[in-house]
Structure formats: structure tokens, C-alpha cells
Image (tube, rainbow, N blue to C red; front, side, top):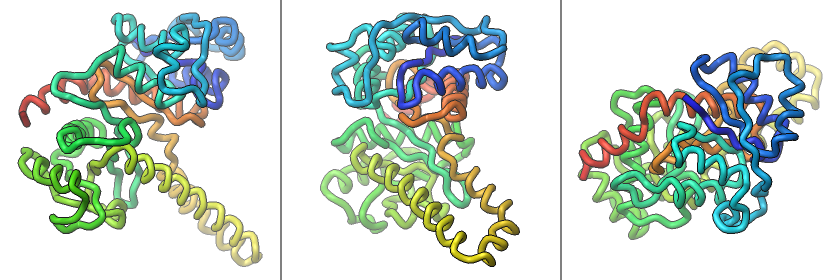
Amino acid sequence: MIIALDAMGGDNAPQEIISGAVQALEEIPADVSFKLVGDESLIKAELDKYKVDLARFSIVHSSEVVTMDDPPTAAIRGKKDSSIAIAVKLVKEGEADALVSAGNTGASVACCVLKLGRLPGIDRPAIATVIPAPEGKFVLLDSGANVDSKPEMLNQFSIMGEIYAKAILELESPRVGLFSNGSEDGKGNEVTKATFKLLKENDYNFIGNVEGTDLFKDKVDVVVCDGFIGNLVLKSCEGIAKGISGMLKKNIKKKQVRKVGYALSKGAFDELKEKTDSRATGGAPLLGVNGIFIKAHGSSDAYALKNALKVAHELTLKEINKQIIAGIEQEA
């Protein structure tokens, strides 16, 4: 198996990207190799810092970089020799089995959709993000690939999300919910109401509408929504988590007795931090494209990139796209 890695994508490229790839050597089987795509001189300079066997690495040079501020069309029209464009080309031509990038989301998604194409029966691919909850995890999709979605597209998201939850969360019968402004059947806008009817006809465990207060109560395993809402939910969850953590630290420091209490409870705080660390997930797949693409967070560090590579390896092994094609055909 060969995994292509966009070495120039993200806020911390190429240092953290290369470091993550080196760390992955110990946790991904030896029969997996990596193609590092980007500025050859910069990549070599980073690899020289590590005293490890680099036989599993090869470098594919690219002369351009799509920045985080570039428009979505940059990788398609303006910067055809960018690291993300070359990495997608490797997957397209069968020279890599999967791709990981922490770069510009809009550009990488657009490049993958146009160059790799869509799976049969899929109108629009969706980004599926695994979010930690008190009693486990749930999958949110679409979390950013499509701002507007028709009911038919949301129905396809639900099928892909159910299949993904089975493969990654190892759930026998994932509970699928449609995100709305209330749990009652008649809630939502016209798109949500039309989608509800479609999801109700599917042969899986559809539990109906779910609202924001349901997400962290162990009521749902797959949450379906359009990319505009999904991205707002995702970013809000991240912001709230950081905000509460900051407030907690600030208030603990105010009194000595609180500091003592924190020291005694440090184990519990550490467990909570580990469980809610988004870096442990590594990245989110763009489900529905004819290839494996894992989108890592733009601010990803080496630990997050290592885990994103592990997700790419796992989805390739489980042949997730074949499962999606079969699922779409079954529900057609």
C-alpha cells in the first residue's frame, strides 16, 4: 500500500507533516510506504533531522503550494503543480492508494472531486468527522464540503455515514439521526422535512430528527446535515471546548485550595483531555470520491498527522468505497 502525503499543506508544514510521517513508521505496518509530495529540498532537509530508516519514504517534487487563503479553484486552474494537485494525481493514476492533506479544505476537496470523480450513485461527496462524546463518539456529516444540499444528497450522506460508523466505530446498527431544530417529526425547513421522508424509507436504524442537545447524550451515532450547518457545529464544539478549558484553568488559579483540588483530580482531567483531543482522530475522510482522501485539520501537529495517516491506512484496508457503492445500490 502507498499513501501520498501533501507535505506542504497546513499551518505547520512541512516540519510537523514530516514529523508525523516519521512517527507513523512505528504504528503502520512495514508493507506501507509513503510518497511525500512537495518542495524536494525542504522535505529532504526535514528528513535529515531524523535517525530512522527512510527506505519507506519517497519524494515527489512539486514547485507550487496552495495556501490557506487561495480560492478553491487554485489547485485546479492556477497552481497545477501544487503539492495537493500532484498528490491527487498520484491517486488518480494508481500510483498511490490514499491521500492525506492538512491544506486548504476548499481547494483539496474541489481537486479531489473534479480529478478523482464521484462514486456511482453519489451526487456530492461529504466530509465525515468523528466527534467524541461522554459515552462514545458520533459521526457528523457533512462537516464542510457542501454549503447547500438537496434532500437526495443528504440521503446519500446518511447511507455513507451509516457505513462509515460500522467500519470505524465498529457499531453493528448505528443510530442515524437528521439534524434539525427539534426532535419532532414535523420540525425543520422544507429541505429537512423532505429529507426526513427519504431517510425513513432506508433499511437502517433511522431514529428521526435530533437537535443540538441530543448530540452528547448517547442518543445518536450518525448525525446528518449539510456542510454549512455541520461546519458550524464542528467549529462551535471546538470553540466551546477550548473556552471551557481556559475558564477552568483561570478559575483554578484564583485560590490555593482549588490548586490542591486540581492536583488531586489531575488524573481525571488528563483522561478528559485525552478523550476530547481531536488530534487523536487525525483527520476526516471525504466520503463519496473515487479514492481515499483524508482531510486533516489545518493546524495539525505531528501527532494529528500520524493519526490521519493511520485512518487512511485503515479505510484503504477496509475498502470503504466498495462498501459505500454496495450500500448505495442496496438503498436505490
